[in-house]
Amino acid sequence: MVLEQLENTINQGKKKLALLIDPDKTFGNKLTQMALDATKFHVDFIFYGGSLINNAHFANEILRIKEFTKIPIVLFPGSNMQVSDNADAILFLSLLSSRNAEYLIGQQVVAAPFVRNSNLESISTAYLLVDGGRITTAHYMSNSLPIPSDKPEIAINTAIAAELMGFKCIYLDAGSGAMSPVPEDLIYAVKQNVSIPLIVGGGINTPEKLNLAYNAGADVAVIGTSIENDPSLLKDFAKIVKSFA
Ligand code: 1GP
Image 1 (tube, rainbow, N blue to C red):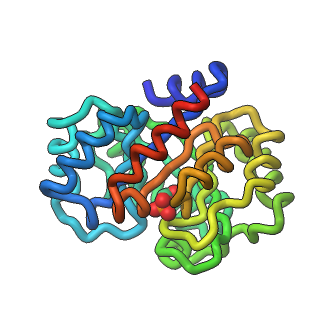
Image 2: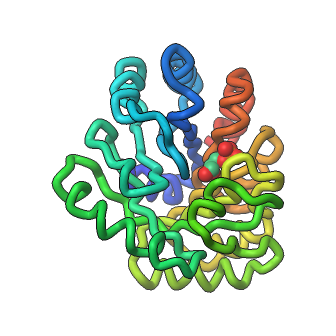
């Protein structure tokens, strides 16, 4: 089970790597190669989804990934249209950093029966967008303000509220292709105040930045854009993950 693996990460003091695959950018042969590389470099999870998906065959592509790897595929949905039984699990997200009811609970109400009737493992996840220096698709599509990156107290309070409300993990995201990743002091501050697993992503585009995120307290780091642009980077990211093993 994916949640169990996330929780074990903390207990074992290890770090995990999630490769984010955007169905609009990675498909066909590129997707096959990505799945093979992910296996070769011991990626822990494949996150699959995006804030806006135009690939009508996105669900079938999951089956292609499964042909080439046994890594758990976790849906990271930008909307209620991105639910598919072909995956193994789903981050059942609520955008807790926003005040937009549609992304706090509206989309979830529409998706709930589909998730319930599927075989997906559902992982209730408090999703917090943090300002990464530019407006990302996630910010725009969710019509919500990110948490200012120099206001860790807002992130702390939101994370504590999430834990009190029973969320199983927290995902701090500067948004795909962010200019700056979530600052280390903000990651550290959140980590010190909650005991549930902490996922961090957005703008982590060098091994150095990955190392900083892990050292600050990220249990799982999510990397998408940089590997999409240069798949050979995966090897270098994998070395950093291994250094925590
Ligand atoms: C975005 O956290 C993910 O939701 C990954 O971000 O594409 O910038 O790596 P990048």
